[in-house]
Length: 114
Length: 114
Image 1 (spheres, rainbow over the protein chains, first blue to last red):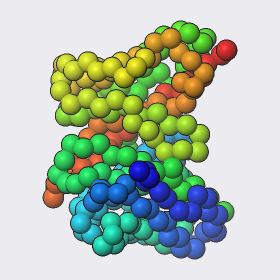
Image 2 (tube, chains in turn red, cyan):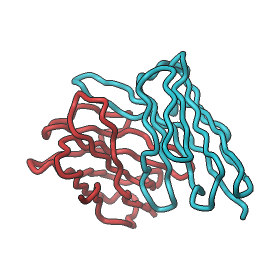
Image 3 (tube, helix red, strand yellow):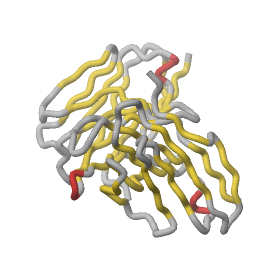
Image 4 (cartoon, rainbow over the protein chains, first blue to last red):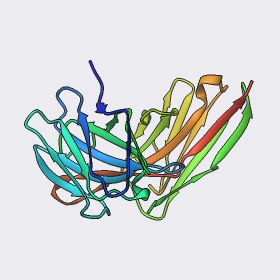
């Protein structure tokens, strides 16, 4: 079975631009979470979606938004990019909510903002 | 910000040596997880701990969930070159609406000298 997939692998943008990152969860998983990992740190929680609804939001500005589609795939959008948005963006999927099932991570999208 | 304190931040060892790293928190977690992250990849789950006092092994890896539920440790025995990477501890934090997020430590970077 395929794991969590993310696209694109790498992305270079300039300040003020907008970016869309995509994620497909493991087959059968209905929950998708997004994390931001700045170089040298652990991942930080951004959003969690389940059954196409936002169920949790981390401490990120409104420039960050996301959505989940009927096939459970998800998009993360970031508007008005800042240099500090440069990071590895990770998507994780889990079976359902609420649950103590673990979250499985994709390979991430490396975003560089110039 | 980060709520889990992970130590040491980095380790330089000889191949074949045993490794020990730990994670502490000021608050209780009901589930502790240990992940390994290779360069350019997403975190991969190594061990999940669900009960206070639980000791779980996965091959050469052993992890324990502290009695107070505020700490955990990970041991790697007889290290080999493929153990190189960054190890993260993480705890589940439940949010409203049944959502859950992972809170990560800062990571322990393991380097092995052949």
